[in-house]
Length: 110
Image 1 (tube, rainbow, N blue to C red):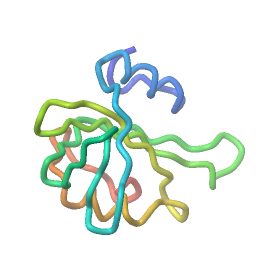
Image 2 (cartoon, rainbow, N blue to C red):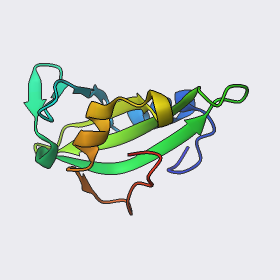
Image 3 (cartoon, rainbow, N blue to C red):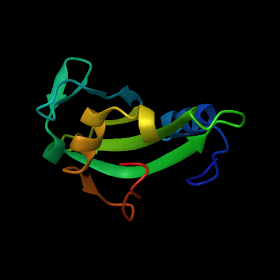
Image 4 (cartoon, one colour):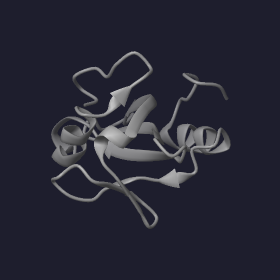
């Protein structure tokens, strides 16, 4: 699948991994640090290449967003979060300070 054709979060994760986004990024703390394996990055070390948002079919609370990120050292990976009421506030704070090359995030995703 190419960019923008994902119908489910699982399809997006699989497709993005197949396109080289193989690392798992995790928001480490309130300071905006993100980890991937044994590496730590600041928000200004990362670029949002694309993002995909999904809503649960039967439960509007079952909503998620997959961010495809690239670090300044070339490492590519994914950061998955809920959005809306269940979003991790640390992820939102991080992404507000992260470069975005795909045209911007809407308010519900960030």
